[in-house]
Image (cartoon, rainbow, N blue to C red; front, top):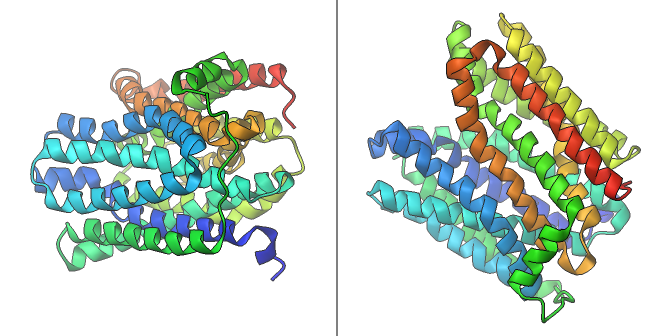
Length: 392
């Protein structure tokens, strides 16, 4: 009971909803490329464009979603987005033209960029400041629980039925969650946020651009995202070429990544609360760089396993703190706007696979050393942000 009373009931509801909806999305999103290849016979270029457009829309839609959340309220954006999102997944199962699928995936990216800042801002509204770092860690754990369960469910369901069925189930799960949230919002009052009514979108955008601390944090986050994107873009190709049964090894590494997160998130999260947010970020990025250096020189499966464990420890230290850093500097009336602006860091996730692919083709032996250097370069921008304001 004491554990459950640590957060407000609506925070626990959103956290459990995160597991529920992420399980739904993990049943389908990781398999979009295979689905497009098998069902649409799409070319690799078309598949890349279709998958990439979601990330691109999420990158630029996050700020808009955050701004609208602060302007119209968490409740309105969350409920509107969840039902549109539900329709998108149903649409994935129905459409038969790849361009329509691409359009739906663009909306998918926008929905995520609207929904994420809104739900995070809502949880922050109901969480004391001293508990917010723990909140980001617990939320990250919830996402990784879903990352273990979701893909397994997707493979199992697809094996028993049509490849379209997981999309229909995901759409249904989103709709069920939306209906449940209506009941939750009727029970718990979600008060409108105090905002500056005359603040237009362009004025708010100028405020964001003028905040150098935020820009430094976004630059650092973009470099981290660029490096991290290699995990599911160049790493499977690199392992497949250099290690026998590389596909099997990579599947083991994916599972290992999620298991290590679930096993170590709580102890590392408790430790990270005793140090500054910046120190936690620095430790995480150093582990990222060390893991990639091991990948670069690994010539046996066990070395990739060691590298993945080290890399994942970096992920546990760094990822929850990236949003915590943004939340620290955000004005009280612009939490969602700033969290939405944090989506700009995902631009690195859009650029990373292209840049990494080029390195893999021309400088394979130096690929992960270069990426380790990019991780370390991000520390320069985080340090500059720290110098602008003491983040504790």
